[in-house]
Length: 235
Image 1 (tube, rainbow, N blue to C red):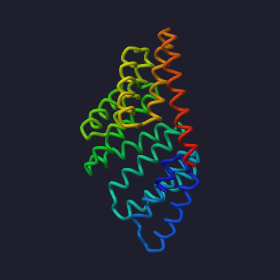
Image 2: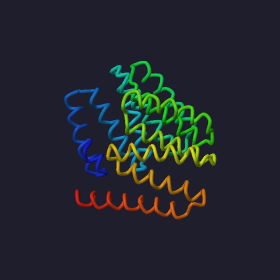
Image 3: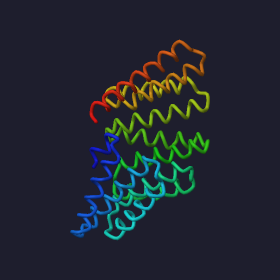
Image 4: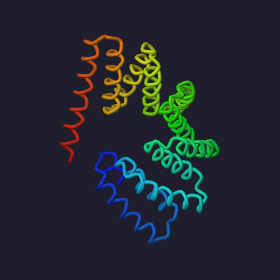
């Protein structure tokens, strides 16, 4: 199920998770039941099926609390926050993220803490609270660098660049996007690479550097086309 999910084959992922859920309930493994409900909720979230996602995640949260799985509780709260965030329910998203952050700090999950700080920053950014967003992103970036989470580092650098872009800070935005691009190319994150090229194009366009913007957009298109071809060959 996890492999199918990573490939974007969501219907197949759900079929596997649902089979696993039946077995976990049959043998009474409540911990894994919560993990699997969380997985199903994440797939529904990605598909935009938010009501279904919340139903699965709320069940997962109840079980995680029942079995005293604090780390799992933190992860599930984060995912509930993600659903609220996607729905534009920012106050509720922040509440979930802040609860998750407290738990992840309690259990010493530094990688989870970094991801949650990044999520909080994304809500602040969506609300136009740019100074607060940058504060969260900078904390997240420091943790990602500390634990060697290059994927998280790349995402956070991109988010920092977007804040600068929204504020008209083009030089700083470009620097952040280029740093993100270098990391994403290093780790082979082709989707992140395409997004970085696209963001760099936005900056060049905003600066009136149209030839450079066009080149960056073309690199983004080429990257996404290469991903599409590879994905098609794997089906």
